[in-house]
Image 1 (tube, rainbow, N blue to C red):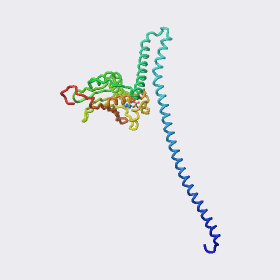
Image 2: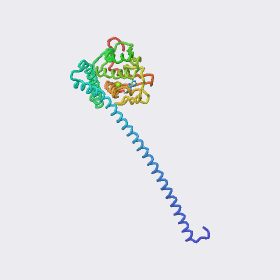
Image 3: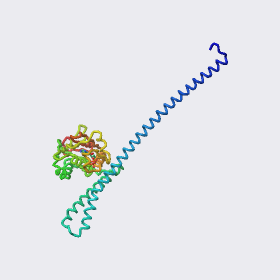
Image 4: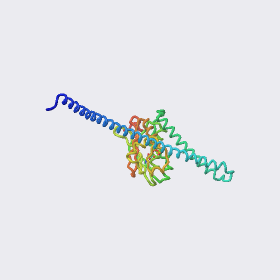
Length: 296
Ligand SMILES: Nc1ncnc2c1ncn2[C@@H]1O[C@H](COP(=O)(O)OP(=O)(O)O)[C@@H](O)[C@H]1O
Ligand SMILES: [Mg+2]
């Protein structure tokens, strides 16, 4: 700083430093601003994600309510409608009464099934279901299920076959609840398989001696990203193909809840357009040979 007095150079330096200070301050505020901006953006993205989730939950709730209202109203309308005709009829169409009575009865049974399913899932989720286990023949329980459901698969000209190779087995299960599991799975296979389709039930004892019962159909299938979702209560595949079918979305979660109570598991495997297979695994301690000398 040649040529400047001490006083001049001091003030110049002070000036320079203070300008530098301002610049540093700017830089400091700039960084803080950038950080705050990044945090604000992060918060906005979290809020956006939460909003999307809330919207999805809201949509799911609306779909559930609309579907449930439809499922409950349909049989109720039949009951109210046909009983009203009888009430107002003044004995004019008495010959139709048995037919109307049949519709009312069917709608009542349907309504009872829906209510029973809702109560079942609530009790399963609350851990209030207890098993009354007994030894039953595997063949017998599968035959009983096939016989119960025969009218609905015959109506669609679907072929159902049961294939089991190996010695006869007895399983230690709650008879009614195990039947309910199989009925829920088999009724889905019938519902989602077109006319002339095929359903194959088979059972295999695995190397670890667990029993696996599979129910395979040639139906419409389930998209891979929905395989887990449909096991949750009230969830159904959102597809124009399946929406023409009735249902509350409780059959699979009830089946899974009941097989888990037996210590087993339900797994679905599916290929859209090619069919679905439901695998039921029952742990080895519940599987016994019917003949004591046979090796299972
Ligand atoms: N065998 C199957 N083939 C195709 N889709 C199926 C099958 N089983 C279940 N699903 C799908 O899973 C959904 C849930 O099944 P479920 O819990 O039994 O309820 P619901 O039969 O009342 O709809 C069905 O609505 C359907 O979309
Ligand atoms: Mg079902």
